[in-house]
Length: 416
Image 1 (cartoon, rainbow, N blue to C red):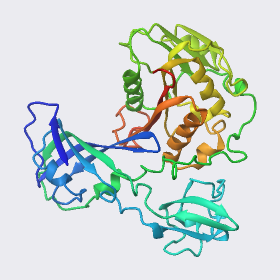
Image 2: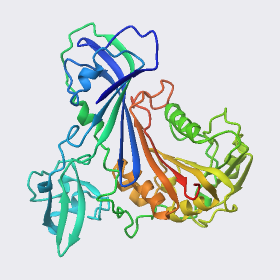
Image 3: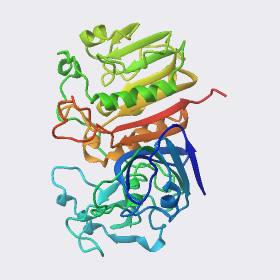
């Protein structure tokens, strides 16, 4: 079923065979009680040369800037449907961890790896980057799943048309399979068969630099860690979660809290490692210097906050389940937890597993932290990629796209 809506008036160029469109693809789906949303922005959509999921090209024909086209995507419509024969056993000896030097590679339950780590397995070759999933391991045999990460999933695909222009020259050139593009990554963040993913191997939470965090962070870093477009997305996400009069805890806070300025928050407490950074954060009403890796318990009372947010910091926690569990304690029933992160970090202090997993597995890892506390409901994940990098950004000359934004959002249970 396709639906078409509009949120902009006056757009005059319609999508046709000779037009190019700028669009946002939004893929929404649910697995194992977790709701997932992936947003990817793409330029140069062309109905004549590109390939689309069934029914989407017809639905997009005639759409104008501001229109939203939505189709339901049953299993098998975006990627090949799940095939039982693509789940099979191989000798454990075929899993060659040494083919990815410098990275800890082991066939833990639910983990994804490139097929190139397999030797002597049908349809694989050394440079094969297609992901497969590890399942059961017993008696020297490993069960692997070669199905696409999005196989067997029913989804809703929306296309937000941001701009349309007539193409002046020939419409030939590279064709794009948009079903393939929008499913590149989604599915990897979900649990396998509803069972917890085993990210928690010995050494998963070790860092390159195990010296005192208070010493490492003693020097103020008066800077931001993502580009302005990405940080705007973070603020938009917090805007959706926060309301006037709320008490908010900014966990692992720094120079900026990235909270929406128009929200009249009753309190914004900051917890971080550098006092100079916290003191310079004009959004904070109060702050405390506290090392969560040394003392995971938060220095606040039960139910003290309406929301807890953390921006690009969860990757440094060495006992994240304890910290997030205590964040649940200081939240009121029904309160919101919002954890945002990206693909940039301080290499000496990031945990080992964070460096080693697929970007979409990081979403699954953070969701796993939240789920394992047993305190949260309505767990949701979000990824946003493909926005143009701001022209004034230091990396604009080398990186066309803004930093991706990933998030896990949940509601503290007991609020009914």
